[in-house]
Length: 304
Image 1 (spheres, one colour):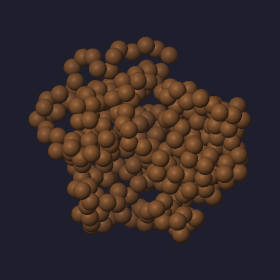
Image 2 (cartoon, rainbow, N blue to C red):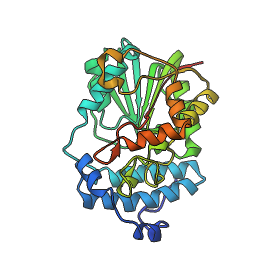
Image 3 (tube, helix red, strand yellow):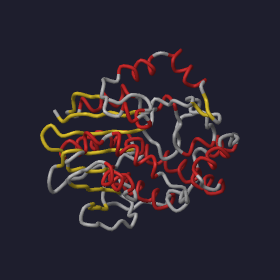
Image 4 (cartoon, one colour):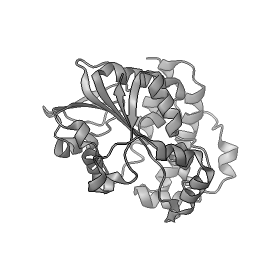
């Protein structure tokens, strides 16, 4: 792995643009995350520099160095007492039918919160997590944590289900195909790939929300989200890398127990993306100044 200069060094290429903007979404982002505003602004400075550098870096090993450097810099700043345990438990219950009695691999597992929720609600056979940032997880005999790359990786034994939750948006476009190929190679025959990622047309979803918190596609992501996608774009990638039978869940199914088991083709999601009037309607329906429905990408794919 090649060494890289500090991502906070040098001139911020977004400096002039940043200086001319007002942080209209800062207070709402602080309220929703529980992270102090001062820390959020420090994260913004770091991530603006990172975004530009990683997208223009052609060497894959140097990009990996930039990823590691970024997460080491921002994770301490984003620490919060606020827990997302309810969200992870909803996700574990939503995919319980795919996870039951299966071996599960969580890519970009963070501190293991989703894996622990799956252990509690998903009745899996085995759980493994991989993350590039060392969160200090301790393997407990049922959950195995590995400190490693989620772009180019191998597993000692193929798994039944791989989950990529809130990961692909953090990968440079040049690294996305390799991530998906590695996932495919890690799966058993007819294995399942579950992908969750925010939808670009309801962005931005990263630190750039300090500029605009409305989730109405007014500002492009310029922070750690390097590759916010649409349903159509991600489906094209999955098909090209050997996945088929793509299905999704109904809107808000994670909050509605009676709808959790339903799986359907993502026609509704694609229709909303492709219809400007429907998109504008979702932008109009707000809570606390932010669009209520953001058409999040949830795809369940089978290894062809």
